[in-house]
Length: 139
Image (cartoon, rainbow, N blue to C red; front, side, top):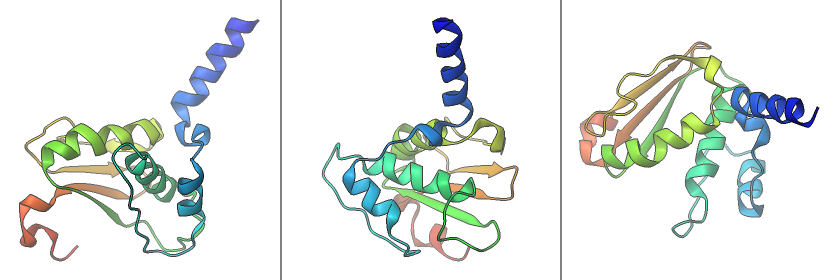
């Protein structure tokens, strides 16, 4: 009986990881702000990446109450593509419902920008500031 309940909890956690996210107080305040543009500043290890991943996954998963438009693009920026591959992409993967993913080329390539395409029309681009200004224009 207990084993069956634990297996069910594991399945739910795997299928809907965002439902099990419990933010720290500063993350809770960040998520509660209705502004479409917000800044999150904190020290190393303060949870910025997890908070950001939860915010992105909430938006693309249809749970963001502040968004009322059609699906679009989310740009996730890091200093380098290697940082993106090491930190951002795994954080998004951990929070995103697996059934939403349509394609994710270069997910594990630290030398390439990566574009995650979702089945619901959203696109998440992982880019680096070192790519230069031209990579950030348009879109």
